[in-house]
Length: 171
Image (cartoon, rainbow, N blue to C red; front, top):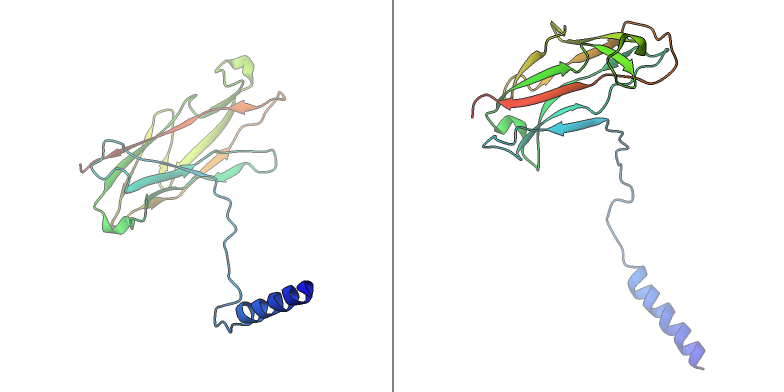
């Protein structure tokens, strides 16, 4: 008898709670994302924490894929819309080894240097840094491309390092 009562109580609860009509949407779209970027900022900016500069997290070449997009973008952070700020920045881009990748990241001729190029819109990087000028109102992104122009003659991981330095110019 206790089992029958418990079963009837359970059924009554399910009907009372589970059969309530609902007008909610029964499906939802979600984004599936792979984000290969990092965000840096000028920590001395009076608006630090409201904006950042999104840069590539890495550049990887293969024998079959010798070109990579390397955009730089000024973005709002923590809910801030970038166009609501008045931010002017310089992003300096510099290569550790002068646009050459070396085995073991050691700049020695015996470490099989491989040349590559970096171009941001109309600026081609040489052995000196380039400066990208951006602002939050009219130019908040710069398209860039890295292209491997040399060829490896030895097996191994060849590396260089690009350094991006952000400075707000209208503090």
